[in-house]
Image (tube, one colour):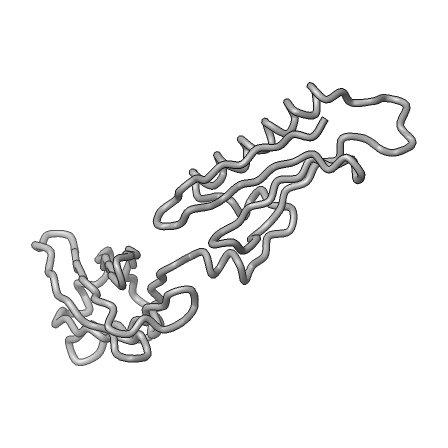
Length: 194
């Protein structure tokens, strides 16, 4: 008997298609994960060997496959897909991460009483020109400070906030990038360089 499961599941802005089937010829229960038609990884479990005396029945195979399918769905919902795949496709998984914010000058950000952060916004690894960034700078004992910036054609943006270096420890910066209807939020904790 041939059986399988197909489920679409959403995590963040990404829809994953999970397809599980019994591959009788290879004695495998295989689950594949697709994003926009591209396979991003697989999970396979052997259910016997060709020389084994013990035969696994269809009901057992279906139950095992159902459990494997559910395991992959749960991992996607928890944002831990790469932890359970047999051989995740790093490039493909990176492409799933639609929008990303990178901190380019993390080693040197304070000079002349200014906190300067250079950031780059990318979509699937490519620059996100004109992405809109909203910043929330917070530190103990002070009201939060908000500012905005727009990324240039290379996805780069820079902000400067006037603040004493002594006020930076335990401060944090929340950055939200918006681009073509998608958003990504990153929190950066500021510490004094050692």
